[in-house]
Image 1 (cartoon, rainbow, N blue to C red):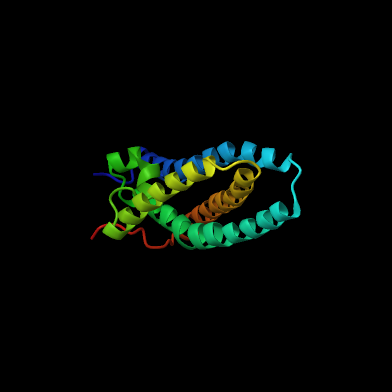
Image 2 (cartoon, helix red, strand yellow):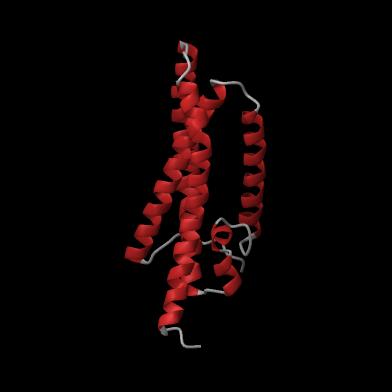
Amino acid sequence: MNTTHPQWSLLRTFAYVWGVGGVCASLVLGLSRLSPRTLEAFSMDLEPLHWAFAIAWTVFMAYAEGYRGFQGRFSPTVVARAVHLTRDPRPHHVLLAPVFCMGFFHGTRKRMILSWSLTAAIVCLVLFVHSLPQPWRGLIDLGVLVGLTWGIATILLFAFRATQTGTTHDPQLPS
């Protein structure tokens, strides 16, 4: 197979952009769904307890979700898997590039268990937080917004670095 053909190069570029862009788009969708609840909470008369919680929770989520979760683990893996698609663009992997990059299939056993388990836990947490009254719901969403924004920024940063240097982290692929 001639991998230097322009169409092959276009497929590789599409795989990378679709993988990274699709993951970022899903995070932006989360931002757009959470933002109204957060704004609603801040339109209420907040008491000192609410402000203290908002600050503490936001700092915690910036560290736990943004720095540790996204920057330390998820974002480098997403980009590494997108780079893998440019090197081995199997049609079904390219078609499903965002979920491939998130590690839902064709990954190590650990990667796939982690991806599916984390998604299930997030769904459960979303259902729980959805049942909370305002302003608590909006204040919790504020921390999640910070984490998601950090996640999008680090995915884009890792993606840019990968295009400049060609180096990435472990894509956590099966042996």
